[in-house]
Length: 134
Ligand code: THU
Image (cartoon, rainbow, N blue to C red; front, side, top):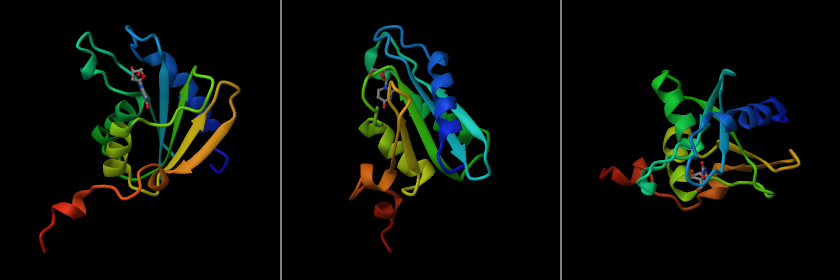
């Protein structure tokens, strides 16, 4: 999968699966494993607003509990005019679970695609290597 058109379409489909009951801002994510499986994610909000979870993290957690550990790309779609980059919390979680080589594929309202590596979105990052003392 090189141009990520199919993954982008999956992210658009995933948008309608969430529960953004307060913001009404629907975000969809589609996470691609190295062996070609796709996991959907969508944002789920909470009346205690800070407990809301983003589309990217629901996609990653769904894949992890199904035993997946190797990922190549995540596509993110919303109804915003511009491309929607993952928030800071999602960048950190994606780094931990998917690795810095993950391709982040953003889709704008015209279904144009912009692609960037996760390492560019979260440079000089904190990670498990900092927890090792030896
Ligand atoms: N949201 C995501 O799902 N992903 C992002 O990367 C940014 C924000 C959600 C969280 C919340 O439900 C809504 O968008 C507005 O912030």
